[in-house]
Length: 163
Image (cartoon, rainbow, N blue to C red; front, side, top):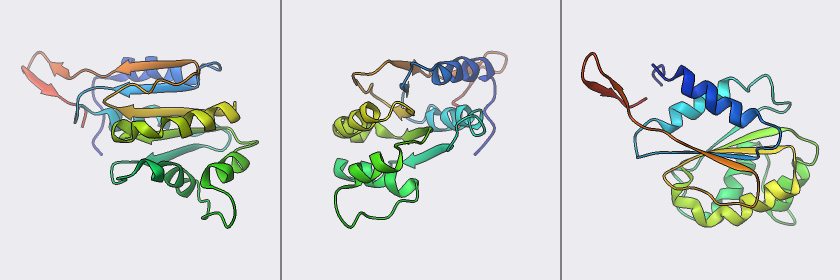
């Protein structure tokens, strides 16, 4: 990916939200192709060494069923398909003592999977979610949204969309 230019302050401010102990969910919203994925990658670079078990990147663009979201998270964490039980149960077990930042990229077409994400967040206080989406994910946890606008360079009268 290309370097993110001119958004250092925004990245810093959004990273502060993610770092707050009582904030469990941060949603990066904005129009399609505005640079939400790149923006989230830049934020997560700041947390790579701070989160005990790291940042787990979960790309959702290629998934076509909401029932696959939990499996995608489990696979991104390197978990195998459970022999017994469900992926959600396996995730809860794997995360019982873990401190992770889950990045759910392109969540807008998986909004119906919000109950699984809510269940995961409710069961593990040390798990945080940073998601990119066109829409807000309303969960019963302390959450913030960050609306990403196009970044116009006034001296050239051209817009840099953060790609």
